[in-house]
Amino acid sequence: DRVSISICNLVTDLRFDLPQEYQYFDNSRSGGRLEIADYCPYQANVRFGDGRTSDCSNATNQLPAGRNTFGERYGEGAACFTQPVPLTASLTRSFGAGCFRYTCNADSTKLAVFVNSVSYTCDQPGNVLNVMNDGIVGTIQCPSSFERLCQKSIDFPTTSPPTSSSPTPSSTTTSTPSSGVAINFMKFLLLAPLFTAFLVVFG
Image (cartoon, rainbow, N blue to C red):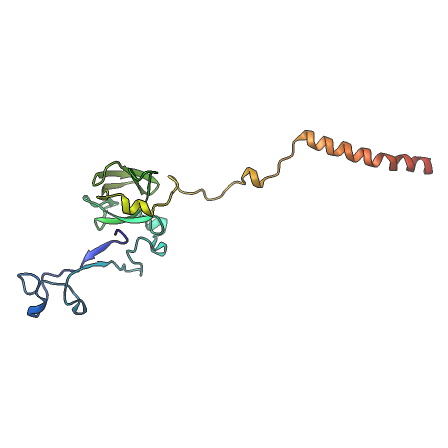
């Protein structure tokens, strides 16, 4: 379902022979890590050393810009994409999968994957995208079907949002020179009788 990066917890060299009922392979020491799961191997979320997890939908897993080596995005509108050629950057290699933001066109026939703010378009399901930007090199596999992801796709800007926003025209009041002159003339007409009275009394 592309919700998170996961790793199969299959072990091929357990320190003991599994009970007969839990042997799923020819090798009696091959199986999952957990007894509670009957030693059945399964895909498990990754827990990183800093306490984050690999849940793509959880925005709290987002790395700060200085540590976001592969331009990933966690949170709403992000999904897990596999990498046939794992992304590399600064001599660092990815897991072979990562969380990236994405968006779909109106009829769900195309899907764009964003690495940092650069988009790579999936024109066909299953295509492989060549990634090369900001020192990041590798490939990303397009999903075999766009339908499920596009059902929950939300729009994202193609570039990072600005650090500060300018007032919009609707929230800014603008006066032209002509309107200012008109207002001052009206004030003069209203105050003229007072000046006249002042001159009559004290003149």
